[in-house]
Amino acid sequence: MMTSRGLFQNEDVDKEVGDVVELLNPKKVTMLHGKPEEYEMLVSRLLGEGRLIKLNETTYPNCYLARSNPNDVARTEQNTYICTDSKEEAGPTNNWLDRREAKEMLFKLIANASAGKELYVLPYVLGPNGSEYSQVGIEITDSAYVAANQMIIALVGDAAIERLEKGEEHVLGIHQTMQLDPNKRYIAHFPKERLIISVNTDYGGNALLSKKCHALRIASAIAKEKGFMTEHMMAIEVTTPEGKSYGISGAFPSSSGKTNLAMINPPEDFKGWKVRLLSDDIIWLFEHGGGVNAINPEYGFFGVAPGTNDKTNPNAMRSINSNTIFTNVALTTEIEPWWEGLGEPPQGLIDWQGRSYDPKNGPAAHPNSRFTTPIRQYPYLSDKYTAAEGMKINAMLFGGRRTTLVPLVFEAYNWAHGVLLGAMLRAETTAAVVGKVGVVRNDPMAMRPFCGYNMADYFAHWLKMGEQIRDKPKIYMINWFRKDENGKYIWPGFGENMRVLKWIIERASGGARDAVETPIGMVPSIESFDYGKVSREQAEKLLYVDKEGWLKELEEVKPFLESFGERMPRELWGEFYKLKERLEE
Ligand code: GTP
Ligand code: SPV
Ligand code: MN
Image (tube, rainbow, N blue to C red; front, side):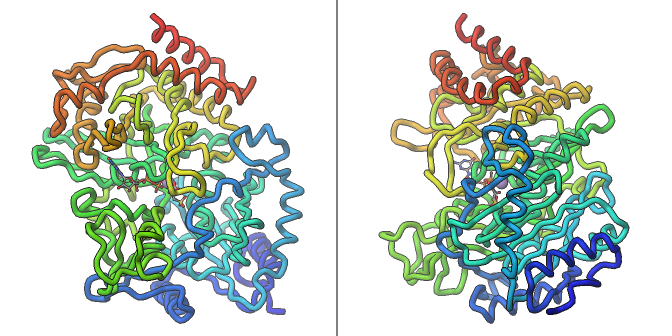
């Protein structure tokens, strides 16, 4: 048996990690210090095993294709657990396990799981190193694929080791590939223990533990204790031609437009406007100077490939053509990555499962295929990205895929009304999670799968934060996904979303843009709204408030809100009934 001590000088951390290593019983342990040679070592191992395919070095330098086991291509929420003392603490939206029983069961399951394998220890920092809001974690994994991806999406190595040696509080994540058996798959979170155990999966949010598991689920529980917020939000800094900057964040469910809005390329007629990216998926928010500021915990993108092209997202296309790991995309005869949205499928295409492409087998790239890319490659990164105090947020957006009912944009009357709109968010499911796609479900604040405690307490936490923040961001609901009778999107989206951001900025800064008071909130008046390419008739449709439809929506949302029972904040019910009354008038 190899020695499992001496990885860290700090005795507590050394024992904590050493005990896990001993239990997993690998043939070798490698600590990753964040060096380029280590990334190359992981890649060459994966190439040797056939787990990675090297892409065209001329057109895609240092890029690779990975193919997942077809049973392991998206997050599996049915296997995701919050492990606490009582089910009440996890709430009705989470799967729950007793934390003591779960720990015992899982530690039994992972005993000797790394036998004969190499284990990687990845200490990492989330957030700007040096920011008091940054956090440290350690992921222990037997997957070189996971380790390589982690080296892109978190700050792996010495910066974290230094902080761990000083005894800083941290999150420990244990990941074991095992047999990828979907029936024994567990993504288990222990907020009290600051522990994550993920087994029988090797994919994305299930296995890259710094992302959804740490930066959202565990960090959300820490945030509730310490008085900050962790959100499934993108964030950008928009600068007007007059040189005024506005921070805008947006929570949209998985695969519903965060990365694309974060990378927005303003249309031609937006001369002098600038957009800079802070985050494409997750932010942590805290009170700062009377307002609220955000930092991005992440160091890389793990973004959806299909739909990305030079028209929809030219800035992404410029960022992902080097130093990128593509997972589950298709492969051309030029040894370049390909996915739906890039035009006609080229001759000789190989699909995401390595078969000759045949439309009978479904799309060439998996609908949840992704790119893993260092954030520093993004050409328009905000200079606030590295700032310890982060970026001020002036407006927050909630939105999701809704074919009908929800207008293109409207403004909440106040913070509590906005929190209700967030709590009432419903959206069509996507390929980012295993299950039926296109089914409308409740996804409050786009956080349903990512809240590490009872969501009723999460709503209360939002209300409490509102009391602490004097200069509150305005809250908006948006919907890019309305469809016409033929099932076609009415709003062109992408760059055109800039027109909506412009209206929001003028509203949020107390500007002159006209708005109509409606029961659901302030809606742009058709005269004042710059709807760009769509016809006036279509724009009217997109801004229409269907009172009957909203009353039905309230009826449908009510049982969901009731499922939280007595824990549901009264103030939100108050807002709910005020909204209902306005609709009935
Ligand atoms: P996660 O990484 O899963 O959290 O997703 P995300 O919210 O970052 O979603 P992303 O921006 O990657 O978009 C997912 C899909 O929606 C892609 O196929 C995009 O092309 C498509 N999409 C994004 N924005 C728009 C839009 O404004 N209109 C339309 N019609 N589609 C969009
Ligand atoms: C999401 O599902 O919201 C993602 C992808 O951003 S994953 O990292 O797999 O969770
Ligand atoms: Mn996401």
